[in-house]
Length: 77
Image (cartoon, rainbow, N blue to C red; front, side):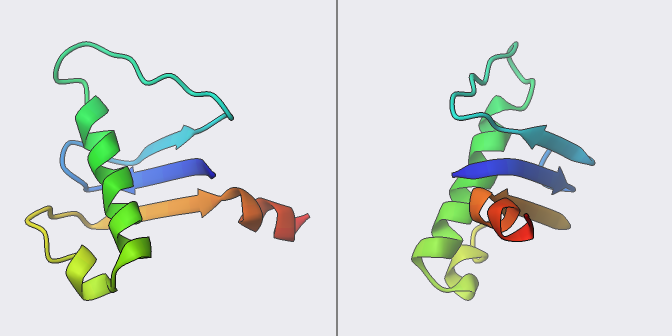
């Protein structure tokens, strides 16, 4: 489960951070970045499923994309 996402320079995001609970609702007005958030999460999914070169071969440009997983928090104590 993704517990935190930090995005910088991906589509419309600049220094964006969002924590996720077991149930998180994404809502907002048109053009507020909801789809861009899901695009970032889809990129993470592609990285997990295929090699990095294939995942990053899409036309999406960004400078920083970081995901933190619940297992990382558990390992940190």
